[in-house]
Amino acid sequence: MKKRKIITSVINNYQGDQRVQKVCNSLMKFGFDVEVVATNLRGNPELKFPYPVHVLSLSAQSGMKMYLNFNWKLFRKLLKITNKEDVLLANDLDALLPNYLVSKIKGCELVFDSHEIFSEVPTLYNRPFRKKIWKALEGFIVPKIKVFYTVSEGYADWFEKTYKIRPEVIMNVPMVQPIKEELNLSLPELKPGEKVLIYQGVLNFSRGIDKMIEAMQFVENAQLWIVGVGPKKSEFEALTSELNLEDTVKFIGQVSPSQLKSITPRADLGLSLEEDFGISYRYALPNKIFDYTHAGIPVLGTNLPEIKNTIEKFGIGKTIQNHTPQHIAELIHEMLEEGKSPYVENLKKAAEVFNWENEEQKLEKIYSSFKVQI
Image (cartoon, rainbow, N blue to C red; front, side):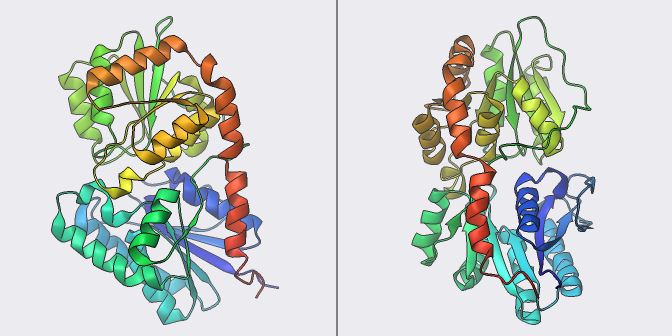
């Protein structure tokens, strides 16, 4: 019997999208064939995957032109490769419209994975016209979706309150036994006794990255490793240069998820200092927190509800009270002086709860509603 195929699409560069890769690996375990449509956003991905990955070349790499270009090319690609028996999986609102239209044209089923509340992201904070467009699109399609999941209880609460539909929660957490890969890139040299702070993720507005950099003016005997790329990278590099912090703030660039798992455990402290610029960040539960947890490093997090509750409930770190550089530096010093040992057991216990193997069981129930064999 032929296997049913799930076609998943995402605007991201697929090389660094850990969540979509984990979902695709799980879908293959469940007995589905998988096909991916992604983009060349901020670089061409290495396509070493056991399933087809189509890369859409974007003529614009930011702004509304990028989204329009992506949606048009995604619509045409899906229209070409989708059959009636396939299942379409849209990752985030920016990929939802083409998936919705093609599902109607082809008569196939649609699944929505909302990694964030896209209409409430910080980049729309002072852009009411753009926000109105995304809100209208969200309000038109989301209430019609039958199979829908998201990454945190806070997000699920918001969707239920706003659209009277509650998505399932599939957290973006690491695997218990990740694929290990020998480190093949050079990391910054450390002086004897020098500590490492790490931020991993997209380099964008409202993630507290500028505050981390400014805090390094007041942190002694430590480096800040910033792992990732994003639209604000050059801005953060300029800030580092302006503050003469090139010796202590290091930009590692984008690395694959498997390489990242070799880098993160080398740090002494993981940072997740998101700011409250909109509902999407207010109720965010970033995967970096769980990556730090599995790597055995304590977390210094923001005081937003989902992040604060997770850190305090499991005793895996501390949370800041405000984003002033001096306050952040004070807590960094405090946690570096404590070291990892006060947190080791709590980190292990948290990793036993927050892992993909647990989330995969919930994901399997969701996809069991689809007939695997056709």
